[in-house]
Length: 284
Image (cartoon, rainbow, N blue to C red; front, side, top):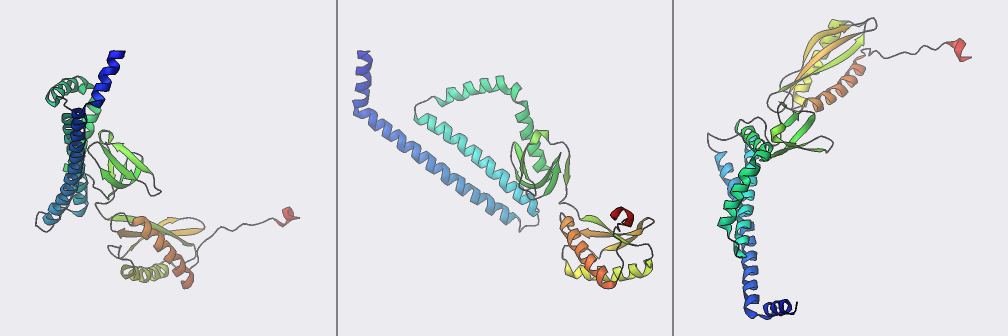
């Protein structure tokens, strides 16, 4: 015990050890600062290169450009972090070459158990390569629907309209519905009284719908009256087809329903509503 105490005391009091430790700390700090600079400069270069490419005939779509920027930034960050770990270990005198060789053997042994990770990375690559969806797209993956926040090497992050963040492993993505690629058609049904003059109502509606094309820039063309959708003993249902730019169908549908209600009231068109008939005998 005394001999061990003396060796520890000698090591602590040895000036050369403190000098070596100080050099190692300075070297590690320099490595960390250099890594931060490389990441920052690398991200700047990635953004500028893709921005310049956008001015050429071979430019990407904006949605794909955002996806590539996020993906390349992730790859750069992972590569720099791995290099930093190797450099720090080398600073402490650890034989990195032997460690990497050993890690290769161990990696081969555990590779069979990491098949899901490999599948995630490969699937993520094909998602970007095939442009299945991109950052900013409105998608539905399984039961998760929302806006794509990030496509990484292993996971995809989707944010719902109410703020939920779904983190989905790329390897589990099988069916995807992308709402941001093509224009969307939304159907709006209007109930009018059974006694209404259908031709007169449709004529008034056409005039109203013609005015919407200049009011809402999200509309691709003037909404169309598709005709009578349903006939019941109390009312008729007229259907309107509205084509909008991608992912704007719900917002436009709400606005048009509001405008329709005001227009029908001002035009004197009867809108059916439930009537409750009370029995006077029961009220007594």
